[in-house]
Length: 252
Length: 355
Image (cartoon, rainbow over all chains, first blue to last red; front, top):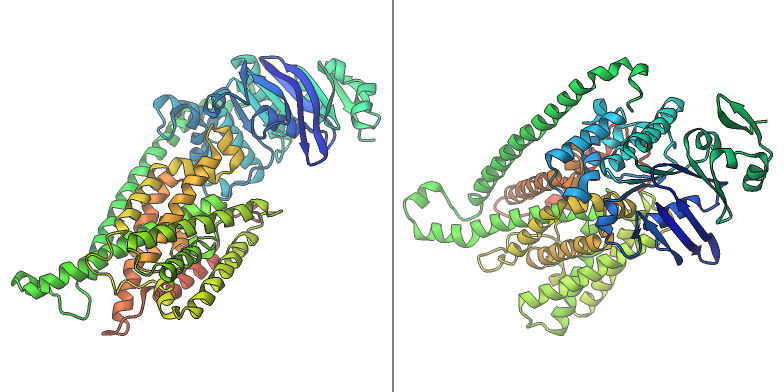
Protein backbone atom coordinates (compact mmCIF):
# COMPACT_ATOMS: atom_id res chain seq x y z
CA UNK A 1 0.00 0.00 0.00
CA UNK A 2 1.22 3.46 -0.87
CA UNK A 3 -0.51 6.14 1.20
CA UNK A 4 -0.36 9.77 0.16
CA UNK A 5 -1.83 12.39 2.35
CA UNK A 6 -2.01 16.11 1.58
CA UNK A 7 1.04 15.98 -0.73
CA UNK A 8 2.03 19.36 -2.18
CA UNK A 9 4.89 20.57 -4.33
CA UNK A 10 5.55 23.99 -5.86
CA UNK A 11 8.23 25.26 -8.19
CA UNK A 12 8.47 28.93 -7.38
CA UNK A 13 4.89 30.15 -7.44
CA UNK A 14 3.61 27.30 -9.62
CA UNK A 15 1.87 24.53 -7.73
CA UNK A 16 2.67 21.32 -9.59
CA UNK A 17 1.20 18.90 -7.10
CA UNK A 18 -1.73 20.26 -5.16
CA UNK A 19 -2.95 18.52 -2.01
CA UNK A 20 -3.03 14.95 -3.29
CA UNK A 21 -4.44 12.33 -0.97
CA UNK A 22 -4.75 8.78 -2.25
CA UNK A 23 -4.16 5.14 -1.46
CA UNK A 24 -2.51 2.92 -4.06
CA UNK A 25 -3.43 -0.70 -3.29
CA UNK A 26 -0.76 -3.39 -2.93
CA UNK A 27 -0.25 -6.00 -5.61
CA UNK A 28 -1.54 -4.76 -8.92
CA UNK A 29 -0.85 -2.26 -11.65
CA UNK A 30 -1.79 1.34 -11.04
CA UNK A 31 -1.58 3.90 -13.85
CA UNK A 32 -1.35 7.63 -13.40
CA UNK A 33 -2.84 9.44 -16.40
CA UNK A 34 -3.42 13.05 -17.28
CA UNK A 35 -2.47 15.76 -19.76
CA UNK A 36 0.97 17.37 -19.96
CA UNK A 37 1.76 19.37 -16.87
CA UNK A 38 -0.74 17.50 -14.72
CA UNK A 39 1.98 16.76 -12.16
CA UNK A 40 2.14 12.99 -12.81
CA UNK A 41 5.91 12.71 -12.99
CA UNK A 42 6.41 15.09 -10.09
CA UNK A 43 4.02 13.05 -7.98
CA UNK A 44 6.02 9.91 -8.82
CA UNK A 45 9.29 11.55 -7.80
CA UNK A 46 7.74 12.74 -4.54
CA UNK A 47 6.55 9.21 -3.75
CA UNK A 48 10.02 7.88 -4.50
CA UNK A 49 11.86 10.59 -2.44
CA UNK A 50 13.74 11.81 -5.53
CA UNK A 51 12.39 15.23 -4.65
CA UNK A 52 11.38 16.54 -1.24
CA UNK A 53 7.74 17.53 -0.88
CA UNK A 54 6.62 20.87 0.50
CA UNK A 55 3.80 19.43 2.56
CA UNK A 56 2.10 16.14 3.27
CA UNK A 57 3.34 12.61 3.87
CA UNK A 58 3.96 9.53 1.77
CA UNK A 59 4.24 6.03 3.18
CA UNK A 60 5.34 3.14 0.97
CA UNK A 61 4.67 -0.24 2.52
CA UNK A 62 4.36 1.50 5.88
CA UNK A 63 7.72 3.31 5.49
CA UNK A 64 7.58 7.09 5.71
CA UNK A 65 9.69 8.11 2.71
CA UNK A 66 10.85 11.32 4.38
CA UNK A 67 12.16 9.54 7.47
CA UNK A 68 13.28 6.06 6.39
CA UNK A 69 16.97 5.50 5.53
CA UNK A 70 17.44 5.72 1.78
CA UNK A 71 19.06 2.31 1.48
CA UNK A 72 16.14 0.61 3.22
CA UNK A 73 13.76 2.39 0.85
CA UNK A 74 15.89 1.22 -2.06
CA UNK A 75 15.18 -2.37 -1.06
CA UNK A 76 11.45 -1.63 -0.89
CA UNK A 77 10.84 0.46 -3.98
CA UNK A 78 12.58 1.13 -7.26
CA UNK A 79 11.99 4.18 -9.44
CA UNK A 80 12.91 4.78 -13.04
CA UNK A 81 12.47 8.27 -14.39
CA UNK A 82 11.62 9.21 -17.90
CA UNK A 83 14.79 10.93 -18.99
CA UNK A 84 17.82 8.75 -18.54
CA UNK A 85 21.06 10.04 -19.93
CA UNK A 86 24.13 8.01 -19.30
CA UNK A 87 27.20 10.02 -20.12
CA UNK A 88 29.36 7.11 -19.10
CA UNK A 89 30.09 3.90 -20.92
CA UNK A 90 28.71 0.94 -18.98
CA UNK A 91 28.06 -2.56 -20.23
CA UNK A 92 24.43 -3.63 -20.08
CA UNK A 93 25.21 -6.39 -17.57
CA UNK A 94 27.14 -3.94 -15.35
CA UNK A 95 24.26 -1.47 -15.44
CA UNK A 96 21.76 -4.15 -14.46
CA UNK A 97 24.16 -5.39 -11.76
CA UNK A 98 24.03 -1.98 -10.10
CA UNK A 99 20.36 -2.70 -9.41
CA UNK A 100 21.66 -5.07 -6.73
CA UNK A 101 23.63 -2.30 -5.04
CA UNK A 102 21.06 -1.68 -2.26
CA UNK A 103 21.21 -5.37 -1.35
CA UNK A 104 24.89 -6.20 -1.48
CA UNK A 105 26.86 -3.00 -2.03
CA UNK A 106 29.57 -3.54 -4.60
CA UNK A 107 30.06 -7.25 -3.92
CA UNK A 108 27.44 -9.29 -5.78
CA UNK A 109 26.63 -12.70 -4.35
CA UNK A 110 25.44 -15.79 -6.22
CA UNK A 111 21.88 -14.76 -5.43
CA UNK A 112 22.53 -11.33 -6.93
CA UNK A 113 23.90 -12.98 -10.10
CA UNK A 114 20.63 -14.90 -10.41
CA UNK A 115 18.57 -11.72 -10.18
CA UNK A 116 20.78 -10.01 -12.76
CA UNK A 117 20.56 -12.85 -15.31
CA UNK A 118 16.81 -13.19 -14.76
CA UNK A 119 16.24 -9.47 -15.32
CA UNK A 120 18.35 -9.58 -18.49
CA UNK A 121 16.38 -12.55 -19.74
CA UNK A 122 12.97 -11.04 -18.94
CA UNK A 123 13.80 -7.98 -21.00
CA UNK A 124 15.28 -9.92 -23.87
CA UNK A 125 18.71 -8.46 -23.23
CA UNK A 126 20.90 -11.56 -22.99
CA UNK A 127 22.27 -11.18 -26.53
CA UNK A 128 23.12 -7.54 -25.72
CA UNK A 129 24.44 -8.07 -22.19
CA UNK A 130 28.09 -7.46 -23.06
CA UNK A 131 27.46 -4.42 -25.22
CA UNK A 132 27.90 -0.89 -23.97
CA UNK A 133 24.64 0.92 -23.20
CA UNK A 134 25.59 3.79 -25.51
CA UNK A 135 25.82 1.37 -28.44
CA UNK A 136 22.14 0.40 -28.08
CA UNK A 137 19.10 1.84 -29.78
CA UNK A 138 16.68 3.98 -27.77
CA UNK A 139 14.30 1.11 -27.13
CA UNK A 140 17.04 -1.30 -26.14
CA UNK A 141 18.45 1.28 -23.76
CA UNK A 142 15.04 1.80 -22.18
CA UNK A 143 14.79 -1.96 -21.63
CA UNK A 144 18.26 -1.99 -20.06
CA UNK A 145 17.21 0.65 -17.51
CA UNK A 146 14.02 -1.29 -16.75
CA UNK A 147 16.10 -4.44 -16.26
CA UNK A 148 18.20 -2.55 -13.72
CA UNK A 149 15.23 -1.57 -11.55
CA UNK A 150 13.81 -5.07 -12.00
CA UNK A 151 17.04 -6.58 -10.68
CA UNK A 152 16.56 -4.36 -7.65
CA UNK A 153 13.79 -6.83 -6.81
CA UNK A 154 11.63 -4.46 -4.80
CA UNK A 155 8.02 -4.94 -3.76
CA UNK A 156 7.13 -1.58 -5.26
CA UNK A 157 8.13 -0.63 -8.80
CA UNK A 158 7.59 2.94 -9.99
CA UNK A 159 8.08 3.70 -13.68
CA UNK A 160 7.72 7.08 -15.34
CA UNK A 161 6.54 6.49 -18.91
CA UNK A 162 8.13 3.07 -19.36
CA UNK A 163 6.82 2.86 -22.93
CA UNK A 164 8.95 5.81 -23.97
CA UNK A 165 11.05 4.86 -27.00
CA UNK A 166 9.47 1.43 -27.30
CA UNK A 167 7.84 0.21 -30.51
CA UNK A 168 4.42 -1.47 -30.47
CA UNK A 169 5.76 -4.97 -29.94
CA UNK A 170 7.96 -3.97 -27.05
CA UNK A 171 5.28 -1.72 -25.57
CA UNK A 172 2.86 -4.61 -25.42
CA UNK A 173 5.52 -6.94 -24.06
CA UNK A 174 6.47 -4.35 -21.44
CA UNK A 175 2.87 -4.03 -20.25
CA UNK A 176 2.48 -7.82 -20.20
CA UNK A 177 5.66 -8.08 -18.17
CA UNK A 178 4.39 -5.49 -15.67
CA UNK A 179 1.11 -7.38 -15.47
CA UNK A 180 2.97 -10.64 -14.79
CA UNK A 181 5.13 -8.98 -12.12
CA UNK A 182 1.92 -7.96 -10.36
CA UNK A 183 0.00 -11.20 -10.90
CA UNK A 184 2.74 -13.79 -10.36
CA UNK A 185 5.17 -12.08 -8.02
CA UNK A 186 2.62 -9.91 -6.20
CA UNK A 187 4.53 -6.69 -6.91
CA UNK A 188 2.91 -3.29 -6.77
CA UNK A 189 3.56 -1.52 -10.07
CA UNK A 190 2.86 2.19 -10.52
CA UNK A 191 3.31 3.68 -13.97
CA UNK A 192 2.89 7.15 -15.39
CA UNK A 193 1.47 6.56 -18.82
CA UNK A 194 0.29 8.72 -21.68
CA UNK A 195 -1.72 6.21 -23.66
CA UNK A 196 -5.09 5.86 -21.91
CA UNK A 197 -5.77 2.61 -23.76
CA UNK A 198 -2.68 0.90 -22.35
CA UNK A 199 -3.82 2.15 -18.94
CA UNK A 200 -7.30 0.80 -19.57
CA UNK A 201 -6.18 -2.64 -20.76
CA UNK A 202 -3.46 -3.37 -18.24
CA UNK A 203 -4.20 -1.64 -14.96
CA UNK A 204 -6.31 -2.43 -11.94
CA UNK A 205 -6.47 1.15 -10.74
CA UNK A 206 -6.20 4.45 -12.60
CA UNK A 207 -5.37 7.81 -11.04
CA UNK A 208 -6.42 10.72 -13.24
CA UNK A 209 -4.66 14.02 -12.61
CA UNK A 210 -4.98 17.51 -13.94
CA UNK A 211 -3.37 20.79 -12.88
CA UNK A 212 -1.60 19.14 -9.96
CA UNK A 213 -4.81 17.76 -8.47
CA UNK A 214 -6.04 14.21 -8.32
CA UNK A 215 -9.41 14.36 -10.07
CA UNK A 216 -10.48 10.73 -10.04
CA UNK A 217 -9.33 7.36 -8.85
CA UNK A 218 -10.99 4.15 -9.88
CA UNK A 219 -11.03 1.01 -11.98
CA UNK A 220 -10.59 1.28 -15.75
CA UNK A 221 -14.35 0.82 -16.02
CA UNK A 222 -14.95 3.86 -13.82
CA UNK A 223 -12.31 6.10 -15.39
CA UNK A 224 -12.83 5.17 -19.04
CA UNK A 225 -16.01 7.20 -19.29
CA UNK A 226 -16.49 10.05 -21.78
CA UNK A 227 -17.46 12.57 -19.09
CA UNK A 228 -14.50 11.65 -16.84
CA UNK A 229 -12.00 11.83 -19.71
CA UNK A 230 -13.49 15.11 -20.90
CA UNK A 231 -12.87 16.58 -17.48
CA UNK A 232 -9.28 15.30 -17.47
CA UNK A 233 -8.20 15.93 -21.06
CA UNK A 234 -10.62 18.60 -22.22
CA UNK A 235 -11.54 16.68 -25.38
CA UNK A 236 -14.39 14.37 -26.31
CA UNK A 237 -13.31 10.76 -26.33
CA UNK A 238 -15.63 8.04 -27.57
CA UNK A 239 -15.42 4.80 -25.60
CA UNK A 240 -15.77 1.48 -27.41
CA UNK A 241 -15.80 -1.89 -25.76
CA UNK A 242 -13.47 -4.25 -27.64
CA UNK A 243 -12.84 -7.79 -26.41
CA UNK A 244 -13.82 -6.82 -22.90
CA UNK A 245 -11.55 -3.78 -22.77
CA UNK A 246 -12.72 -0.19 -22.84
CA UNK A 247 -10.88 1.64 -25.60
CA UNK A 248 -10.89 5.39 -26.02
CA UNK A 249 -11.12 6.63 -29.58
CA UNK A 250 -9.63 10.09 -29.83
CA UNK A 251 -8.02 10.15 -33.25
CA UNK A 252 -10.91 11.77 -35.10
CA UNK B 1 11.14 -9.69 -22.62
CA UNK B 2 9.96 -13.20 -22.05
CA UNK B 3 6.50 -13.33 -23.53
CA UNK B 4 4.39 -16.37 -22.70
CA UNK B 5 6.12 -19.47 -24.05
CA UNK B 6 3.39 -20.13 -26.59
CA UNK B 7 4.21 -16.98 -28.48
CA UNK B 8 7.88 -17.51 -28.42
CA UNK B 9 9.28 -20.97 -29.03
CA UNK B 10 12.79 -19.53 -28.66
CA UNK B 11 12.28 -19.38 -24.90
CA UNK B 12 13.64 -22.91 -24.69
CA UNK B 13 17.10 -21.63 -25.67
CA UNK B 14 17.12 -18.97 -23.01
CA UNK B 15 18.78 -20.99 -20.24
CA UNK B 16 21.53 -22.08 -22.64
CA UNK B 17 22.23 -18.54 -23.76
CA UNK B 18 22.11 -17.40 -20.15
CA UNK B 19 24.81 -19.94 -19.31
CA UNK B 20 26.84 -18.82 -22.31
CA UNK B 21 26.46 -15.23 -21.18
CA UNK B 22 27.70 -16.11 -17.71
CA UNK B 23 30.69 -17.94 -19.18
CA UNK B 24 31.56 -14.90 -21.28
CA UNK B 25 31.21 -12.68 -18.24
CA UNK B 26 33.68 -14.87 -16.38
CA UNK B 27 36.29 -15.19 -19.10
CA UNK B 28 36.22 -11.44 -19.91
CA UNK B 29 37.54 -10.26 -16.54
CA UNK B 30 40.16 -13.01 -16.46
CA UNK B 31 41.59 -11.97 -19.83
CA UNK B 32 41.47 -8.38 -18.68
CA UNK B 33 43.34 -9.22 -15.47
CA UNK B 34 46.12 -10.83 -17.52
CA UNK B 35 46.30 -7.74 -19.71
CA UNK B 36 46.43 -5.52 -16.64
CA UNK B 37 49.33 -7.49 -15.18
CA UNK B 38 51.14 -7.25 -18.53
CA UNK B 39 50.58 -3.48 -18.59
CA UNK B 40 51.87 -3.29 -15.02
CA UNK B 41 55.05 -5.09 -16.12
CA UNK B 42 55.36 -2.54 -18.92
CA UNK B 43 55.33 0.21 -16.29
CA UNK B 44 58.11 -1.58 -14.39
CA UNK B 45 60.23 -1.69 -17.56
CA UNK B 46 59.59 2.01 -18.25
CA UNK B 47 60.40 2.84 -14.63
CA UNK B 48 63.67 0.89 -14.87
CA UNK B 49 64.56 2.75 -18.07
CA UNK B 50 63.71 6.06 -16.40
CA UNK B 51 66.18 5.35 -13.61
CA UNK B 52 69.06 5.01 -16.03
CA UNK B 53 68.41 8.11 -18.12
CA UNK B 54 69.97 11.40 -17.16
CA UNK B 55 72.95 13.67 -17.45
CA UNK B 56 75.07 11.93 -14.84
CA UNK B 57 76.21 8.50 -15.85
CA UNK B 58 74.30 5.91 -13.88
CA UNK B 59 74.96 2.51 -15.38
CA UNK B 60 74.49 -1.00 -14.16
CA UNK B 61 78.19 -1.92 -14.36
CA UNK B 62 79.14 1.15 -12.32
CA UNK B 63 76.55 0.25 -9.73
CA UNK B 64 77.63 -3.36 -9.60
CA UNK B 65 81.22 -2.19 -9.18
CA UNK B 66 79.96 -0.42 -6.06
CA UNK B 67 80.73 3.22 -6.99
CA UNK B 68 79.35 5.23 -4.11
CA UNK B 69 78.70 8.34 -6.29
CA UNK B 70 76.65 6.35 -8.71
CA UNK B 71 74.58 4.82 -5.93
CA UNK B 72 74.07 8.28 -4.38
CA UNK B 73 72.71 9.72 -7.61
CA UNK B 74 70.54 6.64 -8.00
CA UNK B 75 68.97 6.92 -4.55
CA UNK B 76 68.88 10.70 -4.20
CA UNK B 77 67.73 11.64 -7.69
CA UNK B 78 66.73 8.82 -10.02
CA UNK B 79 64.56 6.71 -7.71
CA UNK B 80 62.67 9.66 -6.21
CA UNK B 81 62.11 11.14 -9.65
CA UNK B 82 60.73 7.91 -11.06
CA UNK B 83 58.51 7.37 -8.04
CA UNK B 84 57.24 10.94 -8.27
CA UNK B 85 56.39 10.45 -11.94
CA UNK B 86 54.48 7.26 -11.21
CA UNK B 87 52.65 8.62 -8.17
CA UNK B 88 51.67 11.88 -9.84
CA UNK B 89 50.73 10.22 -13.13
CA UNK B 90 48.52 7.66 -11.42
CA UNK B 91 46.78 10.16 -9.18
CA UNK B 92 46.18 12.91 -11.72
CA UNK B 93 44.68 10.46 -14.21
CA UNK B 94 42.36 8.98 -11.58
CA UNK B 95 41.41 12.48 -10.38
CA UNK B 96 40.50 13.33 -13.98
CA UNK B 97 38.29 10.26 -14.19
CA UNK B 98 36.47 11.10 -10.95
CA UNK B 99 36.06 14.71 -12.07
CA UNK B 100 34.48 13.55 -15.34
CA UNK B 101 31.98 11.37 -13.52
CA UNK B 102 31.09 14.15 -11.09
CA UNK B 103 30.54 16.69 -13.85
CA UNK B 104 28.92 13.99 -16.00
CA UNK B 105 31.02 15.24 -18.87
CA UNK B 106 33.95 13.66 -20.67
CA UNK B 107 35.69 16.90 -21.54
CA UNK B 108 36.69 18.14 -18.12
CA UNK B 109 39.62 17.50 -15.82
CA UNK B 110 41.06 19.32 -12.80
CA UNK B 111 43.20 21.59 -15.00
CA UNK B 112 40.25 22.70 -17.14
CA UNK B 113 37.70 23.45 -14.41
CA UNK B 114 39.73 25.81 -12.25
CA UNK B 115 40.93 23.29 -9.64
CA UNK B 116 44.59 23.60 -10.60
CA UNK B 117 44.36 27.38 -11.04
CA UNK B 118 42.79 27.72 -7.60
CA UNK B 119 45.52 25.58 -6.05
CA UNK B 120 48.11 27.80 -7.72
CA UNK B 121 46.39 30.91 -6.38
CA UNK B 122 46.49 29.29 -2.94
CA UNK B 123 50.25 28.72 -3.13
CA UNK B 124 50.76 32.29 -4.30
CA UNK B 125 48.76 33.63 -1.35
CA UNK B 126 50.88 31.67 1.16
CA UNK B 127 54.09 32.63 -0.60
CA UNK B 128 53.17 36.30 -0.34
CA UNK B 129 51.68 36.31 3.17
CA UNK B 130 53.89 33.70 4.85
CA UNK B 131 56.93 33.00 2.68
CA UNK B 132 58.57 30.96 5.44
CA UNK B 133 55.64 28.58 5.85
CA UNK B 134 56.59 24.90 5.65
CA UNK B 135 55.69 22.96 2.50
CA UNK B 136 52.96 21.10 4.37
CA UNK B 137 51.22 24.39 5.24
CA UNK B 138 51.52 25.61 1.66
CA UNK B 139 49.96 22.40 0.51
CA UNK B 140 47.14 22.75 3.01
CA UNK B 141 46.28 26.23 1.81
CA UNK B 142 46.54 25.11 -1.82
CA UNK B 143 44.20 22.25 -0.97
CA UNK B 144 41.69 24.64 0.60
CA UNK B 145 41.75 26.90 -2.45
CA UNK B 146 41.43 23.93 -4.81
CA UNK B 147 38.44 22.69 -2.83
CA UNK B 148 36.74 26.07 -3.02
CA UNK B 149 37.50 26.47 -6.73
CA UNK B 150 36.16 23.03 -7.63
CA UNK B 151 33.08 23.50 -5.47
CA UNK B 152 32.44 26.78 -7.26
CA UNK B 153 32.61 25.02 -10.62
CA UNK B 154 30.19 22.31 -9.53
CA UNK B 155 27.85 24.92 -8.06
CA UNK B 156 27.85 26.90 -11.32
CA UNK B 157 27.26 23.65 -13.18
CA UNK B 158 24.15 22.91 -11.13
CA UNK B 159 22.73 26.30 -12.08
CA UNK B 160 23.38 25.97 -15.81
CA UNK B 161 20.00 25.84 -17.54
CA UNK B 162 20.92 23.17 -20.06
CA UNK B 163 23.86 20.91 -19.56
CA UNK B 164 25.17 20.78 -23.06
CA UNK B 165 28.31 18.76 -23.68
CA UNK B 166 30.23 21.85 -24.73
CA UNK B 167 28.89 24.31 -22.17
CA UNK B 168 30.30 22.33 -19.24
CA UNK B 169 33.99 22.39 -20.24
CA UNK B 170 33.65 25.96 -21.52
CA UNK B 171 32.32 27.05 -18.14
CA UNK B 172 35.28 25.34 -16.48
CA UNK B 173 37.82 26.92 -18.79
CA UNK B 174 36.25 30.31 -18.19
CA UNK B 175 36.34 29.93 -14.40
CA UNK B 176 39.92 28.67 -14.59
CA UNK B 177 40.77 31.64 -16.80
CA UNK B 178 39.39 34.13 -14.30
CA UNK B 179 41.25 32.52 -11.38
CA UNK B 180 44.39 32.24 -13.50
CA UNK B 181 44.37 35.90 -14.46
CA UNK B 182 43.91 36.99 -10.84
CA UNK B 183 46.87 34.79 -9.94
CA UNK B 184 49.00 36.19 -12.73
CA UNK B 185 48.12 39.76 -11.79
CA UNK B 186 49.22 39.35 -8.19
CA UNK B 187 52.27 37.30 -9.17
CA UNK B 188 53.25 40.17 -11.46
CA UNK B 189 52.70 42.79 -8.74
CA UNK B 190 54.76 40.80 -6.25
CA UNK B 191 57.41 39.93 -8.80
CA UNK B 192 56.69 36.20 -8.52
CA UNK B 193 55.98 35.38 -12.17
CA UNK B 194 59.09 33.23 -12.39
CA UNK B 195 58.07 31.23 -9.34
CA UNK B 196 54.53 30.96 -10.67
CA UNK B 197 55.85 29.26 -13.78
CA UNK B 198 57.32 26.48 -11.65
CA UNK B 199 53.83 25.49 -10.53
CA UNK B 200 52.12 26.05 -13.86
CA UNK B 201 54.39 23.81 -15.88
CA UNK B 202 54.95 20.39 -14.41
CA UNK B 203 58.59 19.45 -14.14
CA UNK B 204 60.19 16.48 -12.44
CA UNK B 205 63.78 17.67 -12.83
CA UNK B 206 63.80 19.25 -9.38
CA UNK B 207 62.60 16.10 -7.63
CA UNK B 208 65.12 14.87 -5.06
CA UNK B 209 64.91 12.68 -2.01
CA UNK B 210 63.18 14.69 0.70
CA UNK B 211 61.22 16.80 -1.79
CA UNK B 212 58.67 14.42 -3.20
CA UNK B 213 57.48 12.35 -0.23
CA UNK B 214 54.23 14.29 0.05
CA UNK B 215 53.20 12.54 -3.13
CA UNK B 216 52.67 9.38 -1.09
CA UNK B 217 49.58 11.14 0.23
CA UNK B 218 48.13 11.22 -3.28
CA UNK B 219 48.82 7.50 -3.53
CA UNK B 220 46.62 7.03 -0.47
CA UNK B 221 43.95 9.29 -2.00
CA UNK B 222 44.06 7.27 -5.23
CA UNK B 223 43.53 4.07 -3.28
CA UNK B 224 40.59 5.74 -1.52
CA UNK B 225 39.20 6.54 -4.96
CA UNK B 226 39.46 2.87 -5.90
CA UNK B 227 37.77 1.72 -2.70
CA UNK B 228 34.84 4.06 -3.40
CA UNK B 229 34.81 3.12 -7.11
CA UNK B 230 31.27 1.71 -7.13
CA UNK B 231 29.92 4.82 -5.43
CA UNK B 232 31.50 7.05 -8.04
CA UNK B 233 30.18 4.89 -10.85
CA UNK B 234 26.66 5.16 -9.44
CA UNK B 235 27.04 8.92 -8.88
CA UNK B 236 28.16 9.20 -12.50
CA UNK B 237 24.74 7.89 -13.53
CA UNK B 238 23.14 10.96 -11.98
CA UNK B 239 21.37 12.09 -8.82
CA UNK B 240 18.12 10.20 -9.45
CA UNK B 241 19.84 6.87 -10.11
CA UNK B 242 21.97 7.36 -7.04
CA UNK B 243 19.00 8.11 -4.80
CA UNK B 244 17.04 5.20 -6.24
CA UNK B 245 19.89 2.87 -5.32
CA UNK B 246 19.75 4.15 -1.75
CA UNK B 247 22.96 6.16 -1.81
CA UNK B 248 23.57 9.69 -0.66
CA UNK B 249 24.41 11.64 -3.82
CA UNK B 250 25.65 14.75 -2.05
CA UNK B 251 27.96 12.78 0.23
CA UNK B 252 29.50 10.98 -2.74
CA UNK B 253 29.99 14.27 -4.58
CA UNK B 254 31.66 15.73 -1.49
CA UNK B 255 34.03 12.76 -1.26
CA UNK B 256 34.91 13.12 -4.94
CA UNK B 257 35.42 16.84 -4.53
CA UNK B 258 37.86 16.33 -1.64
CA UNK B 259 39.81 13.62 -3.49
CA UNK B 260 40.12 15.64 -6.70
CA UNK B 261 41.01 18.91 -4.96
CA UNK B 262 43.62 17.39 -2.65
CA UNK B 263 45.27 15.34 -5.39
CA UNK B 264 45.50 18.41 -7.62
CA UNK B 265 46.81 20.65 -4.84
CA UNK B 266 49.50 18.21 -3.72
CA UNK B 267 50.69 17.51 -7.24
CA UNK B 268 50.82 21.23 -8.10
CA UNK B 269 52.80 22.04 -4.95
CA UNK B 270 55.32 19.25 -5.44
CA UNK B 271 55.87 18.97 -9.20
CA UNK B 272 53.59 21.52 -10.87
CA UNK B 273 50.58 21.14 -13.11
CA UNK B 274 50.44 18.06 -15.32
CA UNK B 275 48.13 19.07 -18.15
CA UNK B 276 45.95 16.88 -20.39
CA UNK B 277 46.67 13.72 -18.42
CA UNK B 278 43.33 13.73 -16.63
CA UNK B 279 41.57 14.30 -19.93
CA UNK B 280 43.37 11.92 -22.26
CA UNK B 281 43.85 8.84 -20.10
CA UNK B 282 40.27 8.46 -18.79
CA UNK B 283 38.87 8.96 -22.29
CA UNK B 284 41.24 6.34 -23.68
CA UNK B 285 40.36 3.89 -20.91
CA UNK B 286 36.65 4.59 -21.36
CA UNK B 287 36.93 3.80 -25.04
CA UNK B 288 38.72 0.51 -24.38
CA UNK B 289 37.13 -0.76 -21.19
CA UNK B 290 34.14 1.44 -20.35
CA UNK B 291 33.48 3.43 -17.21
CA UNK B 292 32.70 0.86 -14.55
CA UNK B 293 35.19 2.32 -12.11
CA UNK B 294 35.95 -0.99 -10.42
CA UNK B 295 37.59 -1.86 -13.75
CA UNK B 296 38.48 1.58 -15.05
CA UNK B 297 40.44 2.88 -12.05
CA UNK B 298 43.28 0.28 -12.28
CA UNK B 299 43.58 0.85 -16.02
CA UNK B 300 43.52 4.62 -15.60
CA UNK B 301 46.24 4.35 -12.97
CA UNK B 302 48.46 2.17 -15.17
CA UNK B 303 47.96 4.28 -18.31
CA UNK B 304 48.44 7.48 -16.31
CA UNK B 305 51.75 6.32 -14.90
CA UNK B 306 52.85 5.01 -18.30
CA UNK B 307 51.93 8.20 -20.14
CA UNK B 308 53.86 10.46 -17.75
CA UNK B 309 56.83 8.08 -17.67
CA UNK B 310 57.07 8.10 -21.45
CA UNK B 311 56.69 11.89 -21.62
CA UNK B 312 59.27 12.41 -18.87
CA UNK B 313 61.74 10.08 -20.63
CA UNK B 314 61.09 11.91 -23.90
CA UNK B 315 61.62 15.28 -22.19
CA UNK B 316 64.99 14.09 -20.96
CA UNK B 317 66.18 12.65 -24.27
CA UNK B 318 64.86 15.02 -26.99
CA UNK B 319 67.42 17.77 -26.32
CA UNK B 320 69.91 15.74 -24.35
CA UNK B 321 71.73 16.87 -22.25
CA UNK B 322 69.12 19.60 -21.75
CA UNK B 323 65.65 18.91 -20.42
CA UNK B 324 62.25 19.86 -21.77
CA UNK B 325 59.76 20.14 -18.87
CA UNK B 326 57.37 17.20 -18.82
CA UNK B 327 54.40 19.57 -18.79
CA UNK B 328 55.42 20.85 -22.19
CA UNK B 329 55.91 17.38 -23.68
CA UNK B 330 52.56 16.33 -22.27
CA UNK B 331 50.77 19.33 -23.73
CA UNK B 332 51.99 18.36 -27.19
CA UNK B 333 51.60 14.59 -26.84
CA UNK B 334 48.33 14.90 -24.92
CA UNK B 335 46.78 17.26 -27.44
CA UNK B 336 47.78 14.91 -30.26
CA UNK B 337 46.32 11.85 -28.55
CA UNK B 338 43.16 13.72 -27.64
CA UNK B 339 42.68 14.98 -31.17
CA UNK B 340 43.10 11.42 -32.40
CA UNK B 341 40.46 10.19 -29.94
CA UNK B 342 38.05 12.91 -31.04
CA UNK B 343 38.55 12.22 -34.74
CA UNK B 344 38.27 8.49 -34.30
CA UNK B 345 35.03 9.06 -32.48
CA UNK B 346 33.06 6.55 -30.54
CA UNK B 347 31.13 3.71 -32.04
CA UNK B 348 27.48 4.66 -32.54
CA UNK B 349 27.17 7.46 -30.03
CA UNK B 350 23.46 7.96 -30.23
CA UNK B 351 21.95 10.60 -28.01
CA UNK B 352 25.37 11.78 -26.92
CA UNK B 353 24.38 15.37 -27.58
CA UNK B 354 23.65 16.15 -23.97
CA UNK B 355 25.99 16.18 -21.02
